[in-house]
Length: 123
Image (cartoon, rainbow, N blue to C red; front, side, top):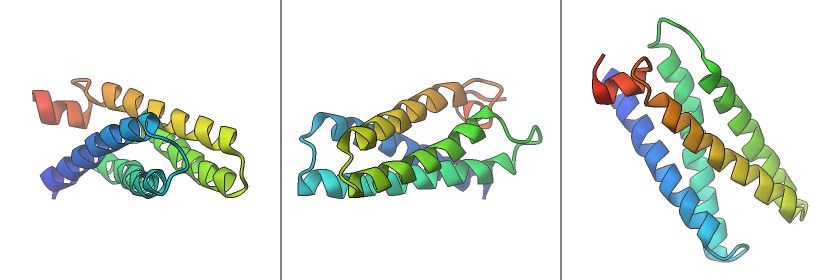
Protein backbone atom coordinates (compact mmCIF):
# COMPACT_ATOMS: atom_id res chain seq x y z
CA UNK A 1 0.00 0.00 0.00
CA UNK A 2 2.85 2.37 0.82
CA UNK A 3 4.20 2.77 -2.75
CA UNK A 4 0.68 3.17 -4.20
CA UNK A 5 -0.24 5.82 -1.65
CA UNK A 6 2.95 7.78 -2.27
CA UNK A 7 2.72 7.28 -6.03
CA UNK A 8 -0.87 8.47 -6.29
CA UNK A 9 -0.08 11.46 -4.06
CA UNK A 10 2.79 12.43 -6.35
CA UNK A 11 0.70 11.98 -9.51
CA UNK A 12 -2.18 14.10 -8.18
CA UNK A 13 0.21 16.76 -6.87
CA UNK A 14 2.06 17.05 -10.18
CA UNK A 15 -1.21 17.11 -12.11
CA UNK A 16 -2.42 19.83 -9.74
CA UNK A 17 0.65 21.94 -10.47
CA UNK A 18 0.14 21.58 -14.22
CA UNK A 19 -3.62 22.25 -14.13
CA UNK A 20 -3.12 25.13 -11.71
CA UNK A 21 -0.68 26.77 -14.11
CA UNK A 22 -3.13 26.23 -16.98
CA UNK A 23 -5.92 27.84 -14.95
CA UNK A 24 -3.78 30.86 -14.16
CA UNK A 25 -3.01 31.40 -17.84
CA UNK A 26 -6.47 30.85 -19.32
CA UNK A 27 -9.37 33.31 -19.53
CA UNK A 28 -11.38 33.38 -16.32
CA UNK A 29 -15.08 32.69 -15.91
CA UNK A 30 -15.48 30.58 -19.06
CA UNK A 31 -17.17 27.16 -18.98
CA UNK A 32 -13.75 25.60 -19.67
CA UNK A 33 -12.21 27.49 -16.73
CA UNK A 34 -15.01 26.33 -14.45
CA UNK A 35 -14.66 22.68 -15.54
CA UNK A 36 -10.88 22.62 -15.17
CA UNK A 37 -11.21 24.51 -11.88
CA UNK A 38 -13.54 21.84 -10.49
CA UNK A 39 -11.11 19.13 -11.54
CA UNK A 40 -8.22 21.08 -9.97
CA UNK A 41 -10.04 21.56 -6.67
CA UNK A 42 -10.88 17.84 -6.58
CA UNK A 43 -7.26 16.88 -7.18
CA UNK A 44 -6.03 19.41 -4.63
CA UNK A 45 -8.43 17.93 -2.07
CA UNK A 46 -7.08 14.44 -2.81
CA UNK A 47 -3.52 15.70 -2.37
CA UNK A 48 -4.30 17.52 0.89
CA UNK A 49 -6.32 14.68 2.40
CA UNK A 50 -3.78 12.15 1.16
CA UNK A 51 -1.03 13.95 3.07
CA UNK A 52 -2.73 12.92 6.31
CA UNK A 53 -2.69 9.26 5.23
CA UNK A 54 1.01 9.56 4.41
CA UNK A 55 1.50 11.06 7.87
CA UNK A 56 0.48 7.67 9.31
CA UNK A 57 3.56 6.20 7.66
CA UNK A 58 5.83 8.81 9.23
CA UNK A 59 7.00 7.98 12.76
CA UNK A 60 7.73 11.68 13.28
CA UNK A 61 4.04 12.57 13.14
CA UNK A 62 2.46 15.65 11.68
CA UNK A 63 4.58 18.46 10.28
CA UNK A 64 4.01 22.01 9.12
CA UNK A 65 3.15 20.61 5.69
CA UNK A 66 0.05 19.04 7.26
CA UNK A 67 -0.94 22.42 8.65
CA UNK A 68 -0.62 23.72 5.09
CA UNK A 69 -2.83 20.84 3.89
CA UNK A 70 -5.56 21.79 6.36
CA UNK A 71 -5.21 25.45 5.40
CA UNK A 72 -5.45 24.51 1.72
CA UNK A 73 -8.74 22.67 2.28
CA UNK A 74 -10.16 25.67 4.12
CA UNK A 75 -8.81 28.12 1.55
CA UNK A 76 -10.38 26.24 -1.35
CA UNK A 77 -13.73 26.04 0.44
CA UNK A 78 -13.52 29.79 1.04
CA UNK A 79 -12.69 30.40 -2.64
CA UNK A 80 -15.72 28.40 -3.75
CA UNK A 81 -17.99 30.32 -1.40
CA UNK A 82 -16.55 33.62 -2.58
CA UNK A 83 -17.03 32.93 -6.29
CA UNK A 84 -20.60 31.77 -5.67
CA UNK A 85 -21.24 35.10 -3.95
CA UNK A 86 -19.66 36.97 -6.86
CA UNK A 87 -16.51 38.05 -5.02
CA UNK A 88 -14.03 37.40 -7.81
CA UNK A 89 -11.04 39.11 -6.23
CA UNK A 90 -11.34 37.06 -3.00
CA UNK A 91 -11.79 33.89 -5.07
CA UNK A 92 -8.72 34.67 -7.17
CA UNK A 93 -6.56 35.54 -4.15
CA UNK A 94 -7.53 32.37 -2.34
CA UNK A 95 -6.86 30.17 -5.36
CA UNK A 96 -3.50 31.85 -6.00
CA UNK A 97 -2.59 31.22 -2.37
CA UNK A 98 -3.56 27.56 -2.68
CA UNK A 99 -1.46 27.20 -5.81
CA UNK A 100 1.57 28.87 -4.23
CA UNK A 101 1.12 26.67 -1.15
CA UNK A 102 1.07 23.58 -3.37
CA UNK A 103 4.33 24.56 -5.03
CA UNK A 104 6.05 25.48 -1.74
CA UNK A 105 4.90 22.26 -0.05
CA UNK A 106 6.09 20.28 -3.07
CA UNK A 107 9.54 21.82 -2.88
CA UNK A 108 9.89 21.12 0.84
CA UNK A 109 8.43 17.64 0.49
CA UNK A 110 11.39 16.74 -1.70
CA UNK A 111 13.87 17.27 1.12
CA UNK A 112 15.83 14.07 1.83
CA UNK A 113 14.48 13.69 5.39
CA UNK A 114 10.83 13.65 4.14
CA UNK A 115 9.01 10.47 3.07
CA UNK A 116 8.50 11.61 -0.53
CA UNK A 117 12.05 12.97 -0.74
CA UNK A 118 13.24 9.54 0.38
CA UNK A 119 10.95 7.95 -2.20
CA UNK A 120 12.81 9.84 -4.94
CA UNK A 121 16.33 10.10 -3.56
CA UNK A 122 16.59 7.17 -1.15
CA UNK A 123 16.70 7.19 2.66
